[in-house]
Amino acid sequence: MASWESAERQEEVVEEARVCINKALTDDELRAVLARLEREEEKDTFGLVCKRWLRLQSSERRRLRARAGPAMLRRMADRFSSLVELDLSQSVSRSFYPGVTDSDLSVIATGFRGLRILNLQNCKGVTDAGMITLGNGLP
Image (cartoon, rainbow, N blue to C red; front, top):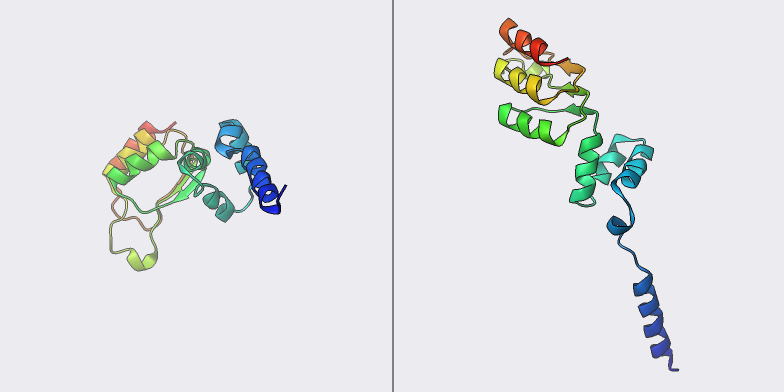
């Protein structure tokens, strides 16, 4: 057998041995891999592999820091279903902007059912009415 035929046969064997990781691993097995990642950067990179991995990474996320209005908060609530901590605080240099408003708190109260920690530092658009809505909506 010529050396090029041997090399071609080896490539065929390698091609047959390849397995698509998305076909080989279940969601639970991928969650176990994600759970072993320690740094946030590693977990974020996990979600860059493909849409399936991003969906799994999003469903397992517990903490999030963001700037968002009501429409984006609704989308975030759908994507990050297990969120426990949400940081919507503003820096002092942006404290002239109201930041989170009562309508945002209404979305948070209905969308983030597992939320336990909410940081609203320097958010000047929140009133007592918004806090009551938040308190009535979250467990």
